[in-house]
Image (cartoon, rainbow over all chains, first blue to last red; front, top):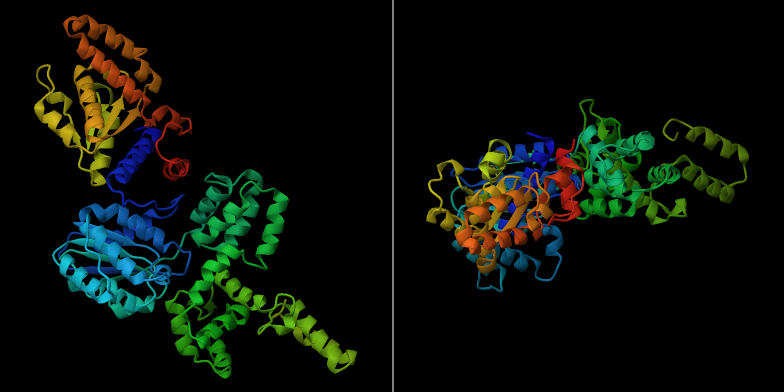
Length: 392
Length: 170
């Protein structure tokens, strides 16, 4: 069959699906690299068997968890008697009576038609339990960060009828462990080719970079890694920009993360303890790529509880440890951490809690030296000391 | 939903694939099995299927208008569009939407034949013409413009079109 014909068929099917099911969701403008992940999750769901299964998707912010969950929903929702997809739960809970609104949406989606509106969360729980326990449903709970919220939406497996499936997306693997979900899926983002492709769609509206932009595109993609959110933001920022603009953009990128990305990523630190956050910032500023045991000793000396902290950071996909026992932090997360420190006092390095750029350190020491002493040999000694490879 | 097409033109490839794709997506699809037709009149079974569909897809091919069956189906579908708010998605397979709308080229030939044959039943022929005129104005899918990389006559947004495009162009 002709290539265009298969394209046409795909378009018709999508159109019919969206017409038939008003809840059919728009997945992504350019769904690159989603298919294989969606397939993996659908196989984990084992739709058709009689037990109630929960599958959790975890991973760092911007990695595409929600996108995958939506695509899964679209592909399997017709196999259930009722289905509901609750998006952005963490954010919506901040709104007035957020939990109540979510309960109502859940009831409305699944029961369809008129529902008697309840006014109290416990009542909502009872209604969900009593109405859903005989129905085979599919529920997507997107961006859940606290167990207690889950308790008001999908507290126990027996709330739902046989064959029901619950999909949860979260940044915190620990939450899935506590829930004892049947399967966990670690969303790891895109591979190199997919990254370049997704970036090109946003930057050029084409699957490949324009000829004269190939090298620059690769620089951006290498920096960002497999995070679709960042590829999208950077790609659209660079759409129809001159080569000169690209160059200066990239130069700036290496010092400061664009605001939109920073804002998204920073929420992943929101509910961390002060100490764990401190550890995160230390690693972002100083210890990325260094030996875990070595760093443990330093952090221990700083008054942190490193083993616990490593676990928590790992569960939230903020940190990984590679086979060489080295700490690995994603570029974007590292720079987000550094940006937090930078923002403490953008123009006064001396007022920041951590310094890692050689120029900043020298500037602060310079200032310090000129106050304490005028001795230039002391300054030279310092210069030498700090000219190690730690501050290239 | 209901799938209307002319078997001789598109059955072996396009409509078969479309039909399979729709079923795979979990869409309950009814198609008129062209080969089982007996006699001239469209069966009540078929009319009922059209009536009960929420959506009809009409695949217009060069030979579509030669089949009085197809034309009867189309007339019924457009009836349901008026009375039951059925959604109708035309697919212009190897034919220009304006040829359908104004019954030009192969459609003109077909109608010369029909007018000759149904001299006594001109209102039937008029009904078909009206149906084609209406269907030709509906926004739908045009294979020709997809092949050229344009998407104008679609009822979906450009962003959505890109979305699907990106999956298949590579």
